[in-house]
Image 1 (cartoon, helix red, strand yellow):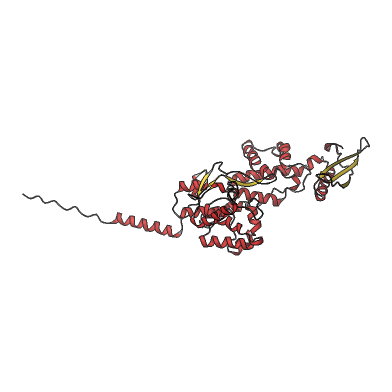
Image 2 (cartoon, rainbow, N blue to C red; image 1 turned 90 degrees about the vertical axis):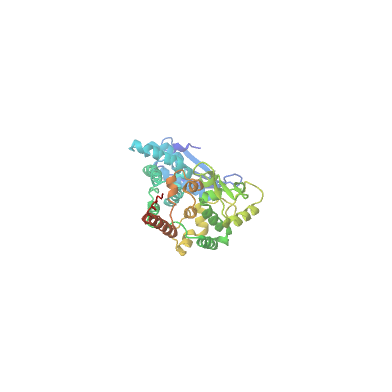
Length: 405
């Protein structure tokens, strides 16, 4: 077999696929060509699990030969390609932006996309990945730097002839941050108004899901009432729930990773405690009973026992269609957390306690959820008026003291 790097550029290739049922990867894809220098017949082959995978591999080899690329480059994973070509991709970059770009590549791009081959990365894949970064509450500048380094690496792939169009040039993602800024005009726009509306949403999502799986509604109720991220809800184990005090110790979250979803520590890298309110205690108790005595069993899973992510919840429940029909077309899965934190704030929870429940590193982040409703604003005005009335009240004159002999 010829080495991958020895395939000459522009040679004419012949291909075939052989089925070998006794092999772990039974479909052997093979390319052959005549070496223009030695005049000898050369070949290159690789086993695949399906005929479709074998065809895709052959197509990659053919396109690589036409573009003058070695097959190893044409089929390279994004993480490997970026590592090999980062200097080229970032040439001309100012030193002050180098570290944020490399940090974005290492901490967000590689964990989310590094396992995919460069040619498998589409505009839709990038778009959904960016949405997940935003849902994880990364700042606008962090997401911008992360997208920027991905754009540069994929642009290098365009120059190398691996892909024809840069799929990382996504648009529209900054509108989500603009929506958060517009919240100042309507500060409660991203929070559901009350418990009844939350239950209506949960029931509608269940009705829209395949086989009307009740678990999706439980996830929505639990996420909103604990002000937790969907990934944290997915990472919740039976042993994390203290039913004597009704406290959930948030220890982990489910996130995308090479090969699928995986569990890792919380975003703040530390555990936190969250109260479980009375409204959802029966729901939690029933799920604990159904899960059995294993403390490592997940409290929430998909209908087939799989991990849950915000994308899984969206697709399984037809989220976008459901919230649009209910009149909440801008509602995101992450707004369940926003709803919970807003309700906690409305209940009078002090900001330093709310920060601990949310797991925020900065008090400034927590203060975004302090959106007093109309009743509290009216009450504040009445309190100030009462205070001013006291200040305006005429002071009584002192009673003169009469001296007698």
